[in-house]
Length: 111
Length: 112
Figure 1: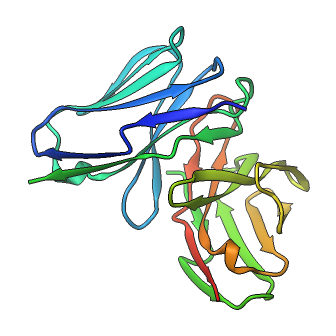
Figure 2 (figure 1 turned 120 degrees about the vertical axis):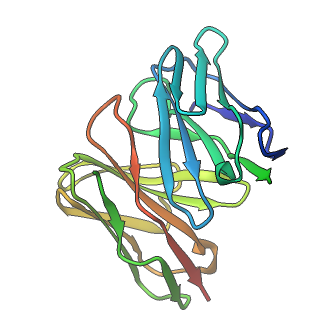
């Protein structure tokens, strides 16, 4: 089973700061997911990436397949970015159906 | 827009009760999942269904069963609820391999 480690567990930032959240996994994968969960529970998929970098607005996700590592960056952070960010990878390095999730990073952005 | 809905946002049940959690998706997805989410443990897969009447155990299936009689609907059943099953339950669906998972809003279950 793939093991997923996220860091940091908690992160507090001031509005406007550049944020980085890290994710490492143990078994080679075909794709990695970044998810966002706001208070109240709903989870939204932000990115699914298998190589390089993807950008969506102020969010940037990168992945290094050789090092089994991914980062999620938030530029010009805003209080509305406050949420739990979760990294997920395929369960056993094969099928993308079953995912193993990191424990999440709680981000708080203060105005 | 893909929509995954869950039958309840909050549920309070007594120990020993049979509990049904329902999930419906409107995008004709073949694959559906039930997860539970607990503080410090993250999301854990309970059961997975890859087609009507087909299911596969996840990491923590004990104390749960599932039913998938129609493609759009995936039910999680707690045969005899216990306090250890107090948790947030999330349903998700995905169309195929390499696709994004879509999550429901979650059901917060309290077993007294």
